[in-house]
Image (cartoon, rainbow, N blue to C red):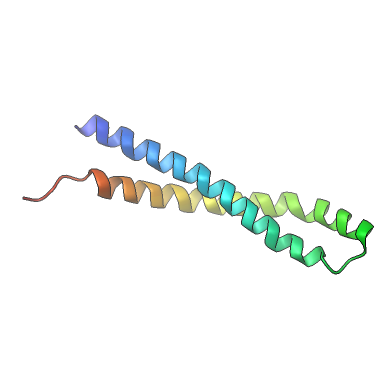
Length: 84
């Protein structure tokens, strides 16, 4: 049972970490790109190209950490033995 528990917790932590990284990157990218909205069209495109990589990196990193920790917690809570 211990091996299955470790496998379930690991898979849940990794999948939620990747999902959190994707969502975090998208949200942070949208928030950072709002700073470019009041520029002329050409400048807006250059601003978006400049801001997007850093925003995706920041959001993905934060999302991966948060998703992995929360996924491991949920996986451990789901697979814990009952105390009866």
